[in-house]
Length: 89
Length: 182
Image (cartoon, rainbow over the protein chains, first blue to last red):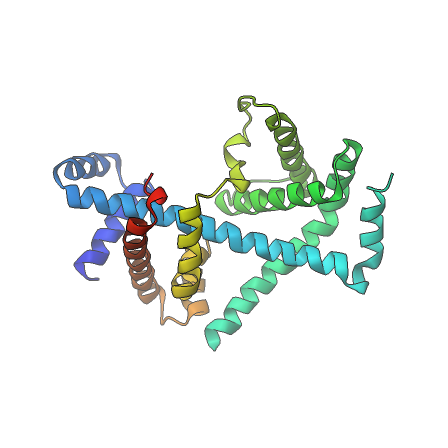
């Protein structure tokens, strides 16, 4: 694996807290001394947050497709009627 | 081609999973919310958020022994409903175990939204792969197979390449989408 990818792996282990505590300390120290590394960590952290948002967004779309299926197809008509009747007052 | 087929299979499995949960747990959730004066659309939104949280819970705690999934989902939905009712007038967050997991409907900064859209189109394959690994938590062997890599090793390398690619895009784009910096 090339050096930059190895670095990504090390940053990941730090961000996801998968490294032994003593290595975490060393990493923290390195960040204090190396502004460029600190910067990379910051952007990589945002990357995981974005992947999380992306995952949720895609998942919600999938769940909504299931909803559409249940509430529009004739196959599920009785389920739909039962559910809608809960809200008619 | 292969990739597409496998992704469809993974998607199909989730569809079956959610279809089952919907039929099992939506009735009690809808009943709960209708009895408290909620609308159908509110029940739908709350229930869907509860499913997202349930999915994440099942994935992150593989050894979580959930005895009764419909009661469990109803529990999450109740919590979301109470939170919604409480949040109308401003109040503080209750110290509930599920509270930290609740921000499904978090307001995304416009820049983050733009960035996501950009990544979803410009780097779809990477985003799908990263999603499969970090969000859906599929094992690397399965990811290798789904995305057409020869094995775990090459899938791992590709995963880091994708992180690098997305990270560089995030950095570059953030300079133009300033509010994402905050």
